[in-house]
Length: 548
Image (tube, rainbow, N blue to C red; front, side, top):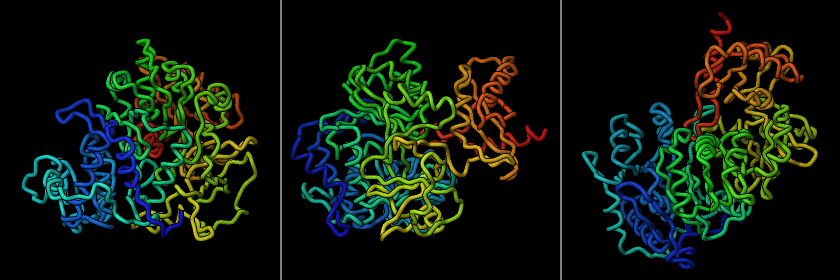
């Protein structure tokens, strides 16, 4: 796609509305505002909203915070913003007040669209006070003034139902903030070409067809559904707490609506899979389950696979907010082959890179690298930093040149993105993930990588998960294994389990150096997927316990 070519992620919507006007686009089977929208109705509402937005000054290039929970208003609003050529700014609401204030100040939005609670918080905490000029309330508007969603739709009653802003492929489409689980949240700049490439890559990787029914438990993934011609079933859950989901509120909609594809974080799959296995649940309508956000433990995959029919698969794509998808593999390959290497400390196999991605492994370097050079690459089998190039790879962070310099490398007029993750290629061309670069443990004896070490200890039947952290300065750090046990394991069993874990570690060259084991009641995790372990917080927790 030429960068000057006209493109808008919303172009898909009127096309789908013409092809399947009466097909259901969105189902929200819960809450006071529950109901559904057909593709015709979604197209009409988004067109009216886009026209109304333009009339109140939210048009081409206007950065606009969107704080509306998943439901029948979020989708028309998101596509209305895209259709108007505006730039949605998307931040996880559970990110915390301090990070929210920082993100919104960094994004410099000129408009704010949110539910009453979001507006009240905006006023109380002064979010983006210096830049926000236009407000739209979804629901009851109170003292903060501005416009309402209902009013926007009325203003846009003269909308062209085929009209979409004439944005170029290279125009900014959205600013999507990272979760901040492994560093400060950063605003990833998406262009319309990035979104279009993601839609194509996801469709091709999983064979998605129009008419499929999706249950997306992460709201951002749901925004691709109309472009793919799918029906979205909005789950009744707090998207910032997937680990605490009520399994019945996932299993019920899957059965009631014949869900064929779902996205769930590893934590959600674990919670639902445990309940489903205990209750003998079968989910025969599901063809495809996608899980991402952190490595998915093989036993979680095995347990959830037991709920599915034999030809259904759990896919574990690898990627990040800055580039998704990069690579993908399935439960069939994991359970038949790669899990055995994972259990022995080989890392987590994330599969072959998708066709649109060129991936490479470069030598580990904590500093910026301005220019790509193939001489940076390391041999097959050697662990290094994962670097990717392709149409879904974003080029910069908004208003953060320092972070952009650390993560991007110039290459023939384009960019390569440094994932900040460590891994290697095997001799079949598959990519293996070994953990975050910033979380490697540099001891006097050498460098330990988190995932290959933790996977060995995670095989213990009474262990829920482990986390390797370093206490002390890089180069002389003490490796410490933090352990979260399965629920119900008594404290009196800690010494026995500690001994068994040390025995496990002694059987492998890369884990025999780990001699300190600490038990933790519940690991800190990211707010987006509840699956990325907060290792820096654990290291701070471990330090005084080791010193004492």
